[in-house]
Image 1: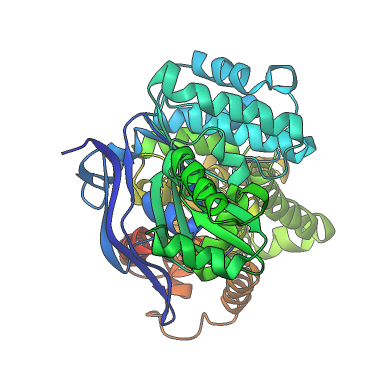
Image 2: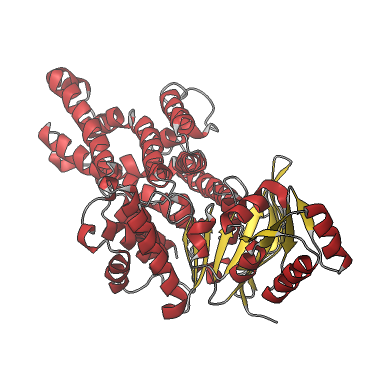
Length: 304
Length: 238
């Protein structure tokens, strides 16, 4: 069996008769960066709150590091760093004191405060009270809080919210390094595929509380790999010809679409049509962008 | 674990006015009596000639229950608000610490702050008595020490309840209103049943079977804290 850091079984949460999350089976492997995607209100934050034991599931279970969260909550949370939705902070305290308030509870060496501030680039502003921070700085402080306890699992809920492009890039680089340098497993939620596709190894897509896709980003890309489109002089007859030779083809408007074909097949199709006196005007590759695919999935289309 | 939560809380209450509140309340009570005695010193000294210290303590005692109720309400609200304000609950409770420890730590912090107020009240009473030239050879040290602390024990149910409400509701209007109403009511319920918990602070210092009221306060306070802890441990953190 594979070594899953997070595994949920039929995890569900019901609010007033309506399922916010239903029968979720997440599987997140050690050392992976897992992109947890879905539009706003799909149940991402609800799921993350259940993963952290902040809210109790209506049904199903959460296992972290192979142990039940319900039974070993404190022991497991010790290995987890989290940032849930918008950052939490004590505005009247400085960044150092904010981290110190957490440090006193999780009991790590004092030097971790300076280290984490250094990692998120807040060292210069460490002595200012946090209420004067920009949203981006507060978000970084949130990430510093999550890192403070040397976690083995980092759960970040929309960590790049409110950051400018440079900040987003910085945080992305930071997160990418986590598994490599420290062996940390990362769960990062977002409503933007573009934000996680460059760092995630696996993605889970949630729609209306249900997991509609969970696979490697590589396989998601494959799904997005496009079709070939042929524009020919007599499309109807050409499609018949291709079908009669056992090649799947669809007539779309005036073009012929061939899905999932490799170079040889395309060459064969072209040769066949030319031999039967069809004029071929164009051979085009149509590539669905990942973003299109994501929209398609989250709008209820499922996988193409 | 409770100790760790408390050490974090000490840091968080900095510059939040909690210490200020704990200092102002007893100072205010003493100042009020200073004014009372100052305005009609000769008359009162004559009236109270039979037991000058005892009468001073009685005058102060009249306002101790209401001050304790108000203090308990405001301190719990300020304490809870530190976490409510920027939704820090989700961060705090996702840390490896039991929710019972979090709640108990806040209860103990409130208790320490209120004890500090009571200590100041005792010191203030002694100082005021001395300033009013009450006889120094008959200082009732025991009563002076009891004036704040015993009613505090008897008002633990209120502290536990107030803290529970303040931690549960993000909107502090309800718990604060509740606390203020209880505090004001306590001025007018003394003639009612001694079973009424809001009368306990007064009866724990004054009248027969004082220890019983203080004891009931401790027991009832712990019971409410326990119920609060059970609820707090199960509740969803939004």
